Length: 262
Picture 1: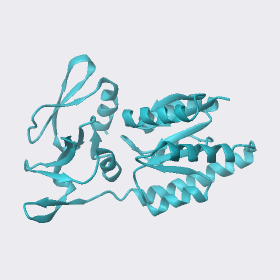
Picture 2: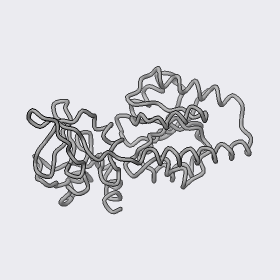
Picture 3: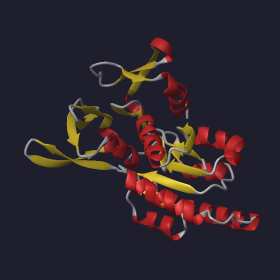
Picture 4: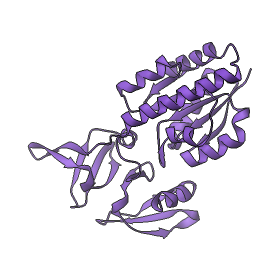
């Protein structure tokens, strides 16, 4: 029997990987949609929630925390959370019958989470039970939101033969090059950081930093101006001047402009 799933994830590669894993586990699983933001998720759930059975949801999205979705629409679906944020508060998911998977995840972890869903969904809940579960979920979201909104203030980086603290506010952008991740400062220095861009997304304030593409996470304050580029894309001119403009894809252009205008 087919299982209808929606994925809430702002990283296309991560979402596609999850879709591939799910269909490898069970070829009858149908991924109805991949939702990249809080706004898109709220709109889709208002219109299509009745035809969906399970949500896989990243905690931090490009336009905020996914918990904000539950404040804007009544979600009656079970949720399996995806996160690179390994915090003690996430233990609450297990205690409340909600599962989560730490990134990077593998097929075994996804399969275990699905098994838990199947086990919990054998019997249908009454409307009263669904309302009670929704209230518990909202309360849980509030407590987790409080625990996960403490964003990183600095990084310990190597400079010559020393380790020095680097304030996040001094970083114009993060980028990948030759399989390493660098922090590029407003003073035109660069330092290696021991995190992937995906992990950095979980640690940085999404109102201040934006995942522009696979290579860049950009500080709002580094964006000097924005040019219209080929095929509906955008080109960001950053300061200090980079080797080349940072490109925003056509698919992310509207979301990016909304982020800049917020």
